[in-house]
Every structure is written in structure tokens, then in C-alpha cells.
Image (cartoon, rainbow, N blue to C red; front, side):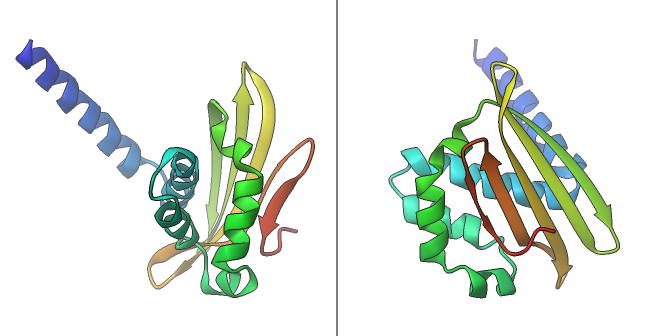
Amino acid sequence: MVIGSGVILIATLAVCNYLLTAAPAPLVVVKDFWFAMEIHQNSPSQQSNYIRAYAHFYSDLQREQSLQEFQELATSHSSFFRAGGRRWFTNVENGTATVEGRFMIDGVEIASALFRLAMTNDTWKIVAYKIQDEVGGFAGGTIP
């Protein structure tokens, strides 16, 4: 029984390591942003999760949208971060990247997200984003 649990743990860690190292760096940034937003609902440390997500913003985006504004928008649209199925698409060119997400429940798309990222000081940062469903959404930065 202990050996079986150990094998499962090792396999889980191997899969996590593969996913983190095999995914393009901009996608890892967006997934970490999304994960912080998903867990803020049930976490006793909600503020630290907002700060974690906000830390992925480029400095210009942070000047445009304060942490408090971001937190208010994210809280008022928290249902976006509860979708079950996700598909991510990434395009990286010349130090910039676009990451697009599609979110589904029971095979029906309920929301989408678009992130623009730029490499700065060897780190990918979100310069703009837009998260929306058929009713509305929220955004920061400029998405053409």
C-alpha cells in the first residue's frame, strides 16, 4: 500500500514537472495567473492570491490598473475562474506572446481570455488581457 502511494506520488510529480517545463514560458505565466485567481475563492489568504496574479502584470499595466481595481473586477467576475474544461493556445514571436484560453462546461464554451505578454528582464509579463463571456467581462491594457 505504501509502495503504491509512493509510485503515484512520483508519477504525479513527474507529470507536473513535464507540464511546467514542456509548456512555453508565456503559457506558464498565464496558467499561474489563472491558478491564483481560481483558488482565491476558497482561500483564507485571498489577498495574497490577488497579489500573486497581479505580480504577473507588466509595470505599465500596474500603473493603468491598481491592485484594488483589479481585485474589484476579478471579484465581480469570479465565475470566469470556475470553468471546468480549458484549452490554451500560445503564439510566441520576437519577444512577445499571445495566449488565448477557451473555457467550457459540459463541452459548451462559456468564456474566453486573451493575454498579451512581453519579455522584460528575462521574465514574461502580462501587458494586456481581456476575459469575457456572452454577458460581459473585464480587461486591462489594450487588446487590438
